[in-house]
Length: 485
Image (cartoon, rainbow, N blue to C red; front, top):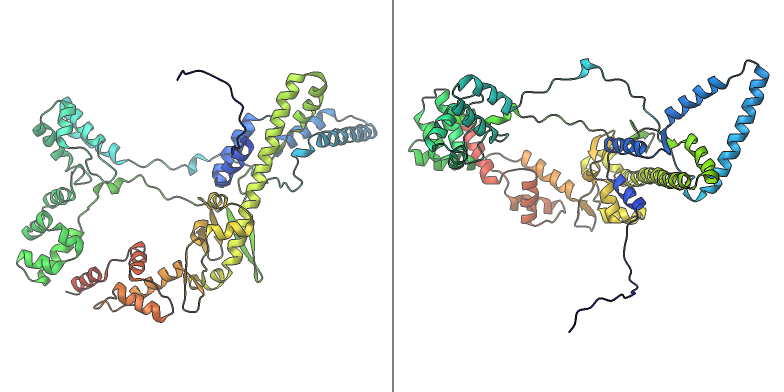
C-alpha cells in the first residue's frame, strides 16, 4: 500500500480552555500573598490597569496645573471638563459594555510603608556554614580541607552523611582510610555526631565524646536499639542478663543523647498565616468577610481609555493593541471578582453548616465533602478543591484551614451522620483517660464506641489511632511499666 499525503475535513468536539478561563482557574487557588504578586505583574504588563492611588495623584496634579486665578472662570472650566469626561465615559462604556460587570467590587488599597532596617532580623547560621567554619580551623592541609568540604556538602539537615565512604574516596581520588580519618574528626565537631552514617554511629560517638563510662548503655546502643524503639524492656533486660528495674537508668541515658544532631542548626522558621476569610459573630449570626488586606485597588486607567477613543479614529494599530489590552484588563478584573465571590460562597456554606461547631466545640462538627458543597453552590468539585487549597479562616474559635472542615461521615445507630473527626477526638479522649496499667486495645475502643452508637470496624479504629500518632496498647503499656519502675 502506497503512502501518500492528503487533506481531509473533519468535525470534532474538543474542550479548549480559553486564556481568560485559565486565568480565572489560576486565581482561585492563590492565597492573598500570592495574589498580590500576580496583580503587580499584571499591572506591569498591561497599561490599561493602574492603582487607584496613582490615578488620584495624577488627577490632583493635573487640576493644580490647570487651576486659573479667577474663581468664576475656574468653576466654568471645571464644569466643562466634567461634562466632557462624563460624555467620554458614557461612550466608552457603551462601546465595551459586554466586558463590564456591574457586580464588580474593587479592592481597597493598602499604603505600603518603607521597611525599617531595625525590623529586619539577621539570617541564622546554617549547619553547613557552621561546619565549614570549624573545618577551616581544624584542617590546615589543603587536601584534608578539600575532603572535609566534600563530606560537609553531603550532610543532610539531620546531620547524617548521605553518601558512602567508598563513593567519596572514589570522587576525591583518595583512599577510604584517608576519608574516614577526616570524617572521624568531623564527627567530633559541634554538633557532636554530625557526619555519621547511622543512628548507632551517631549515638556511640556522643557516648565517647561525653565520656559516658557505661558498658551496658554502650551495649544497648550497639546491639539492641530496635528493642528500645519498641519499648520491649522486658526482652531487653533478658538479653542483657539484668533485672527490668536496672534497664531504666541506661535507657534514660540514651534518651538524653541527640538522635538528629543537625537539627540544632535547622533553618526551619515559624510560618505566619494570613487568613483569607474572617468570620465575626454579630449577635446570634456569623458574618463572613473575604479578607482583602494588602490587595491593591486597581482599575482601568482613564488616561489610556482616552487614548483608546482617540486611536479608534486616528491609528488602527494602536487601537487594536489597546483594545486587546482593555479586553484582558476587564477579564482580569472579572476573574478577581469571581474569585472573591466563589471564596465567599464556599466559606459561607461552611460557616452555616458548622455553626454548632463554632458554638459548642468539636463534638458537634458535622461531616462535609467537596461534592456536597459543590452541588450546593452550583460549581464543579474541582473548583471547590482549588478554593480551599492553602487558604485559612479566622474565627472566634481560632484559625482553621478550609480543608479542616472536609471529612467523611459515619452512620450512627439511629441513622444520623457523624463526622470522622468527631470519632478521632473521642478515641483520643478514651486513650487519655484509660487505665495506664491496662490500656485499651483497638477492639475495646471499638466496643466502647459501639455502646455510644458509633459502629466502626477494628481496622478503622487502628487507622484513626495511627493518624492521631497514638502507639498500640502493648507499646503504651510497656512505656507506663518502664516509667513506673
